[in-house]
Image (cartoon, rainbow, N blue to C red; front, side, top):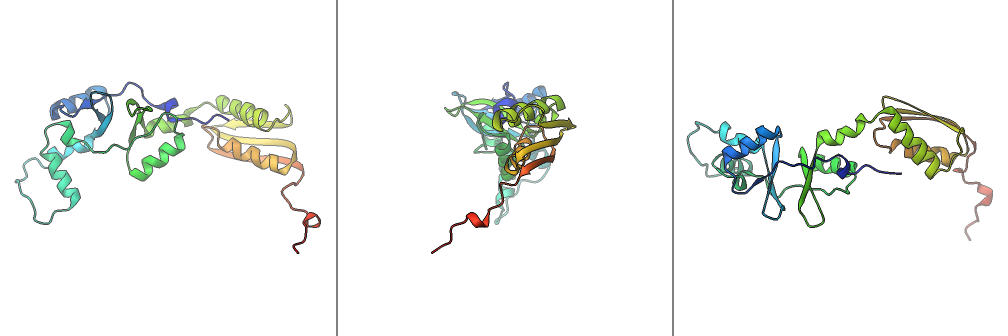
Length: 229
C-alpha cells in the first residue's frame, strides 16, 4: 500500500536567502513571496538555518527600549536581544535548522514538527542540499483528497492487492473521508487487517468496520496447545 511522503506535498520553489542578506531584504523576500520564513543557504544549497517572521519581530519588539544588559540574563532573553541587534540573515536565523527528506512519511514529519515546535521543515536531498520545504498546511493537504480517490485506494491497495479479496465480497463507502466497510470474509484476522490498513490510507478520517467473518482464527484452541513439561 502506498504511503504518502513529504516529497508528494512539499513546495519545490523555495524562497531562500543567504547569510549576508540584510534585514530589510529578508523582510522583502518574505512579503514578496507571501511566506512566513525562509531557509538560509550557502553557495552549495545547503541549509544553514531558517529565518522567520518571529526572528525579525525581535527588532520591532525592542524598538525604543534602552540598550541594557542584565547581569543574569536568561538564554531566551539573550537570544532575543542578539536578534534585535542583528542586521543580516546569518545573525537573525534560528540554527541549526530542523530538516527532513522527501522520502519521509507524512506522519514522521508531523511528529517532528510537533516535537521540535516548528511550523515548517526544509527538505534536503542525499547530499544535504535544499530541494523543497514542507509546512503544517502541506501536511493537512492530504485530507483534502476526494472521497473517490480514497475509495479507490482502499479497494485497489487494501482489498485487492494486500488481502486478495474477490470483488463483491466487501463494499466500501466513503463520505467526507469516513470509510464504511461491510461484507463478509472467511477469517477474522483478514477483517481486522482490512480495518487497520484502510485507516492508514491517506485522507481517511475514520473507519467503521462492519465486515463479518466465518471463523475466528485469532482464538487459540486450548486442545492444540502442547503442555509444558
